[in-house]
Image (cartoon, helix red, strand yellow):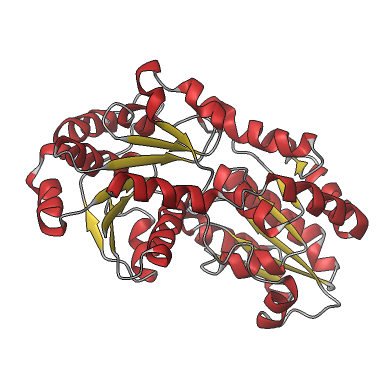
Amino acid sequence: MRVLLTGGGTAGHINPALAIAEIIRRNAPGSVVEFVGVAGGKEEDLVPREGYKLHFVESAGIRRSLSPSNLRALYLALTSPYSKKTNAILDEFRPDLVVGTGGYASWPILVAAAKRKIPTAVHESNAIPGLAVKRLGRHVDEIWVNFSSTENALKTGIKSRVFCVGNPTRQAFGSIDKKDAREQLAIGDDRLFLLSFGGSLGAEKVNEAVLLLMRDYTAKHPEVLHIHATGKREFESCQKKFYEYGLAEHDNCILVDYLYDMPLRMAAADLVISRAGAMTLSELALQRKASILIPSPNVVDNHQFKNADLLASARAAALVEESGLASDLLLRKVTELLENKAMRQEMEQAVSAFADEEANKKIWERVVALTH
């Protein structure tokens, strides 16, 4: 089987594509899987690191505000699916299937493949589909969704091609024992491990709040090991604050730009602070992790808040809105959860109900259906 996967810009689009690649190679050993993305996106870092060949097309995101860059984005949306560069990838690779995971990077190659009658599918992890997925719906053979409610946001004419499969996840999520993970990371039983991250590119408000948390809480609690991933875009500015707050003097405070071994780190964690993207929530559920969710307000239809509120209502996570970061709410939530093991255990039990153990199997079934 020869499969092209496409989707990029941020880890939220790339990680599900990497998970689908793993599903295909595990179920059909010998399959050839390659990726298509955009130069300068996070895929340029993550995809080659996993050993996959990465091709590039020309595409650009459309900003929600008025911007001259939107003219270029619209021009590329109209022309890139028909360009020599895009079609040369199909000519060279000759895929049996092309699967996208959203984002502007997935548009050119999926449209081009669909025009050639090559089997195509697009996966949407969030409840509210992004612009690319909405537009791709009329071109691709199948639309795979995580939430059954996503179908309501799609045009009536394509609903017969929508399949609710859940979110693909890497095999490492949910399969690494907490004790083993802590041994691999040399984290003693006497330490509490707090893991925090915003997004692959960075989340300024989250980074600011977490650095203050490190200064006002972690630095004063040597029994707590706290690792925070800032995102590459903001690492330099965060590092300056890290030194300014004197955090470099505390070996239990660690600042990194990105975590490439997230399944291992998350497995070892006692508490996780993160955004509320659908992929992250699926991973937290599979790992049975207590968490504090800080939904991004800069997303379509505020879907991250809806994700987080669903878990918080089930006592499966704590919810802190970005507008509340200026107060000491995050500090109080962290203190409460780290100092109350029973509360964390209740949250771990509650979030396990949101884990979809069958998602990878369902996705493989759709791959087989499209290629046979």
